[in-house]
Length: 199
Image 1 (cartoon, rainbow, N blue to C red):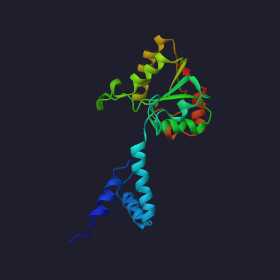
Image 2: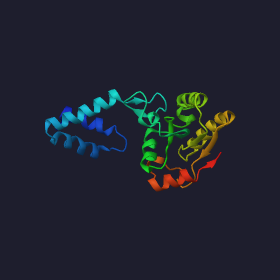
Image 3: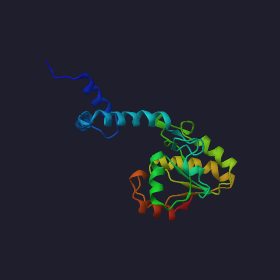
């Protein structure tokens, strides 16, 4: 008869569903959790549940927050005339690490991918256009990933924004083509911001 503990198998299976986690790593994580004192395991479980319940999209920029408006949008010291458009909430964290960018953000939650059924309606483009028509934004920095999908998304948004008299720029190519922003180091992102070109 095979040695099987249902609860352990279920825990391993849940860890395996996380991106980049294979069976061996999932097993290591499960055994690590089980080796912790009960109160530490409970803290971990509580943090997961609380994060899932409290974190939602910022009503303005669509980044993740646990308040109605995220700290960046609420900061009166930021440059509210510039919006950096990114694909993913993780990209906001990457830019914030540079400590160089002082404008606002808008998170699209993806990029065009017709094969996966992702078009303008599935992204937060309508929310972006609403912001542009109700604020004094002068520049949109298109910081979508340098992939075919990211380029198509940037071009589409540029065509929508230009008739509003908004300058649309693209990050300079310090970022490798096909690369994701979240993996770029702070200096590369800073240079990409500084050398952005109008599109």
